[in-house]
Image 1 (tube, one colour):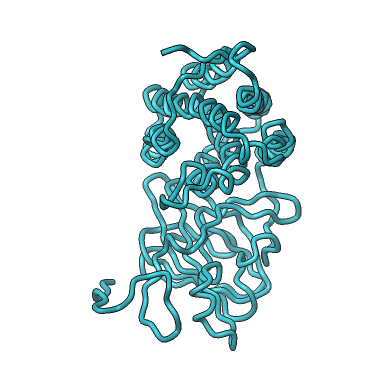
Image 2 (cartoon, helix red, strand yellow):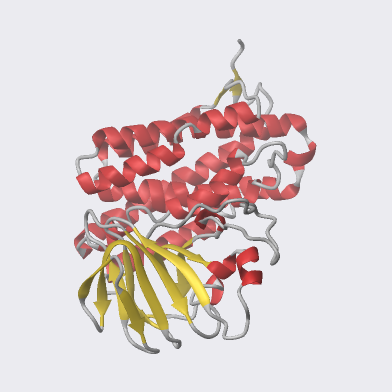
Length: 375
């Protein structure tokens, strides 16, 4: 469907009820997963209209309709679930398989009406991409409050995958207690320019390595489905090391053997690990760590003169990057998961060590474990 171009309308975030305005899809905060009954469930990309302050104020409370953009990319799955309110899903672009009480292919223009309590879900296969609009007619949107989602996910068939997710969540919580997060919370980096500079230089080392990790994974990938996902991820991450260097005037003059060795471990996994291990290492671990890192540091390193700082970008995008490749893992047989769980443990050990070196380098003098190369 084509829409006429808005003329003389304000395409701006400062819209009020008296204005004609456009809110881009990207201005509606996206969530990629939701936790229900202690389990994390993948949503693809979900953007509830009421998660945007301007749209929320524009839509009337009477009747309390709720609208959400939804998207499932190539191979992604929304598990079967039910909810206490009627829901309508409009297929706006692409195609998707409906699962649950009705099993059929949906194409652009189809409308799905789901009565309360009826089991339903959606899945895409290789080559499919689905954009839709989800509408509820009373009460809050299903995921408007992602901490109290109004859905009941049915038992997941892949218990081995669920065990891996639980392990990853537990290790992620442990990771958040490492000394780097303590240093950030202490306020020292805000008030000590030398520590702040050393911290940024250490982060720059890892940022450069992460670019190499993605290049290496792309070079060694043999799976066409994953190669396409990896390529999109690489495009979104490309140049972030240079963004960090230029925004904070870094010299690249930190050498730390522990930081180098731990970073190299990730590259070795891109060469020697199978595709499932690479997904665990990059997305379940490295991107989850990056999300926590961005959340903790974005306020400290925010640069008001720029639209987005390196730290704000990672706080925003790494949450979505955490879910890349999960449908691939969900399709694996249980026999794969003992090795994946051990890989997950090892990767979190390495990621925690990297974070700890950020903290240590920021406070050590040039005569201790870290050395500053002379130029």
